[in-house]
Image (tube, rainbow, N blue to C red):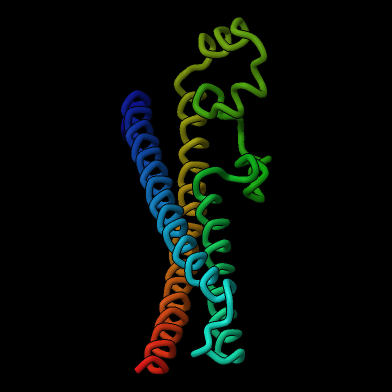
Length: 189
């Protein structure tokens, strides 16, 4: 059985790993946000063209159909952005996010929220660190790792949702744009 120092080192390795995974997930979410901005610009350009004035080559029914497609794409982009921003920052504290969060032991010095909430002064922090033995450190590290794993999973699921919705927004945009262009070009030729 590993010694307490070895267990703590292993827990630290896992904590570092999940911190990197959470950072990677946030980085990917920023790519989704950027792609959503580009798609929003495309939607805006085509929608502005439709709203700008009736094209004589396009009847009102088709203009409404293409407009509805673009509005659907815009709505999907907004939904994707909501999911993606949920990856960057969690709307609630971890202890409020997970049903068993309030039952977990404190993870002082490992969890910043616990530390700031429970230790109001530097002296209280210093005393806590001085009196925290290996068993307390191991438990705090385990609690923080448990929260980190669950937070990463929650954020990753939000990222997947954001990417899926953005993919559908892009498909709807392309279908609407293609329909608009084909209709206008076929009337021209």
